Amino acid sequence: MNLSPAPQGPASLRLASARGRWTLLATVLGSSVVLLGSTVTNVALPRIGDDLDAGLAVLQWTVNGYMLTLAGLILVGGSLGDRFGRRRIFVIGTVWFALSSLLCGLAPDTGTLIAARALQGVGGALLTPGSLAIIEASFHPDDRPRAIGLWSGFGGIGAALGPFLGGWLVDGPGWRWTFLLSILPALVCVPVALRHVPESVGTPPQDAVGTGGAGTRRGLGFDVPGAVLGALALALGTYALTEARDGGPVAMAAAAGALVAGAAFLRVERRSGDPMMPPAIFSSRQFTAVNLITLCVYAGTGGYFFLTALQLQIVVGYSALATGAAMLPNTVLMLLFSSRSGTLAQRLGPRTPLTVGPLVCGAGMLMMLRAGPGASYLRDVLPAQLVMGAGMVVMVAPLTVTLLSSVDASNAGLASGINNAAARAAGLVSVAALPLLVGMGPTAYRSDTAFDAAFSRAMPLCAGLLAVGASVAFGTLRRTAAAARPPHARAHGWLMEPPLVSRFSRHQAVE
Image (cartoon, rainbow, N blue to C red; front, side, top):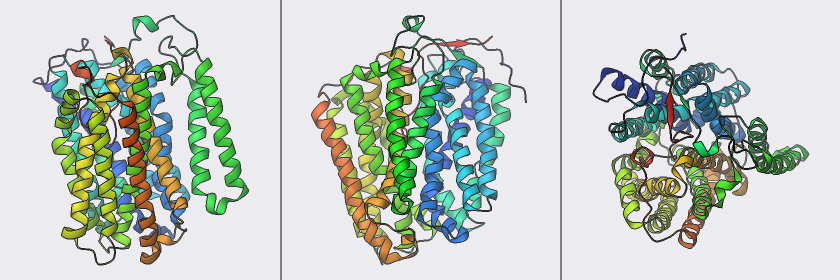
């Protein structure tokens, strides 16, 4: 496999050229395989549990094993791409993701499946940051906004179809094919990227070079202790929450270890000359507020989507395919209207959409309480999905616009990476903690009565998290419109998670 740089001038690709179209295709395919890894799995969980005779904790780890390594290593993946070449790390991540997807599909037992899902997350952390960074580094500034829009739109279609395709595969050839589904686009992506995508590396901003000191970046270095401690804190905290019901002293020790690792992480970041998460960036009040809102919003929505896919199958009685189809209206609304919502946020300011959006989402979650035994799709499920989708439309793109307007342009990539990691970590903790908080036992998903009761307790908690996020937005964000960003740094209305942009605002092509 030839990973040597392909010759190409800096930011010179045009969409009208064949190479420009091939480059766009590679980035779309790469981001799509990661989205498929996130969206197709939930509808397969009941079948996985039945086939492998697994308890609820295994289903949680099937989701969280992937999210844990993705959240813990995504900033590292971006740094690797900036230093060693975005195309090189993108290709390695894509191959890694395909091989781990194959292992997921062939897993003979739950331990192998969870380990393979964690490996999938590592691949996703390697290729995800490079997907958008390649577009930013490669396309001519005149074509870059349209390239980002096309990348977002085509990737959004893949995300919208994920639950539907997953349901079709679960009801057809079986749940293992929901993992094998990612292999084909990955196999197409690799040769296209190697042949057509130009290589690029990051160039640190002028004011970051040689400054040193705690909380600042000296260049393209690696904060290895920070990365290890951050991932360890997430892993131990997730284990403690997932196993708290039956883990006893081991779970308590894991919780204590998570607190120690978290405190050590903060200490290392304050003292490091090249920190992964520089404390100085949180001196922006708006940046801090946006990340608090992100934690609340994605914790609530992460728990909602995890439990709703199970509720529709276990309690309402839908097939996996019907469950995927039932959740399509939410993502279709996001796909159609998110970019307009981002533009509206730039005109009106962040407070209104980030207060109203979470509250509307919370209302949709509470409406899902009607989706019990014998529920009607048109009367009970569809209205909740439409309200939930409307809230996501109002909320997601403005969240990204506000994030990028809260920091200097030279820190846009860093801010985006931190926010993306926060969103994924929030969903991770939510999936681990909600079953514990609502008293969902290890076999609850095998009983429609027990699961429905737990779901009824969980939805108000999820809606409450969204309400907290709305309160933070109302109390901390300004009313005025956000300052316009350069075209390459604008939000693009991604469906379920904030986008990642390059760590640095300038790029250097490798000749």
